[in-house]
Length: 102
Image (cartoon, rainbow, N blue to C red; front, side):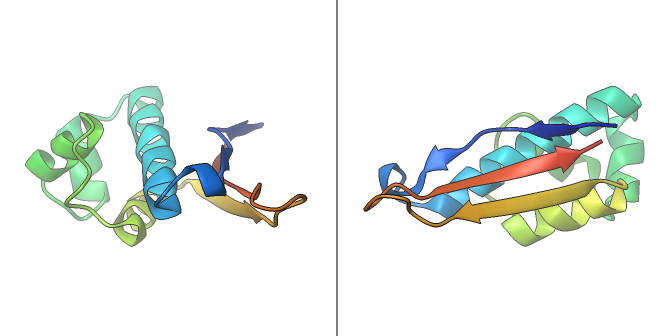
């Protein structure tokens, strides 16, 4: 089991770091559903949501789902997620990333 880091982004270059984390979490969710072979219906039941909502998120329309909700869904699917925020080493160059531990 390894760690898969989705990406690191310079915080000063992104107006909303929350959006960066949500994008990373959505990418992890897409990967987990694909790798486990779960149908969207079964994955939605495990996540305690409905299939149309999960389908929207999996297709990139995650604006109606909060970061907290994405984290809960991934937890329901048995994922271990780590979010790392790095303090700036030089002025304005901090980074944030979400990592999936397989």
